[in-house]
Image 1 (cartoon, rainbow, N blue to C red):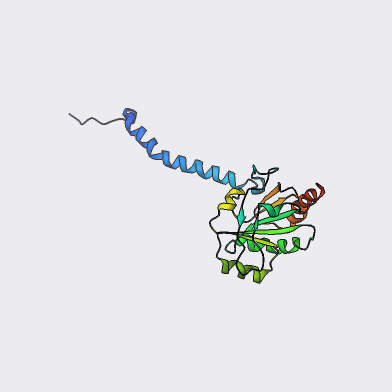
Image 2: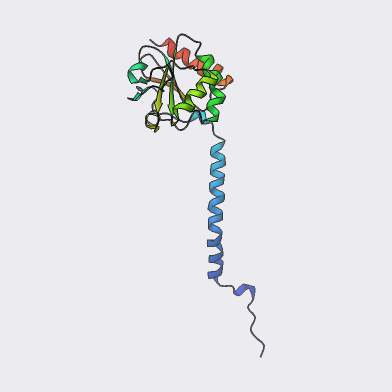
Length: 195
């Protein structure tokens, strides 16, 4: 009597199901990678902000020690158009955008304020000493709490606050020469035109 040989058609459903279950993590991983890549193609400048048109959050930040600049609070954001920049010395894009902030600070119609997020004071002072200090006010946010209240996703981010203390515009990411000319300056002009 010859031994019985299983034909390919006699495969049971259990091994097939196990094969699909073994491939499931790979399929999920590929799906997540596709979602991630599609998400990266989006424009970070378009991240929504629930704070546009609303009063700036309530905050009070101590000054950066030995910077020669005062800290600031919510009350300082009224009466003059203010550009609030969230930065850190450890942030590479902050180094890239810094010349644009120095250029912007030459506009005497606006006030420049910096929120130094999760940074060492000595490092922040060295960064500003090397590259120029565009800020009239610098508040220290050592634990990032104030930045969270501002809705900051990551540094750098820049806000334009109108004379009324309301947030008029939010720029996510580093300011470039192009965004300075085509977005930031026009938004400042809009804020200056409002009384």
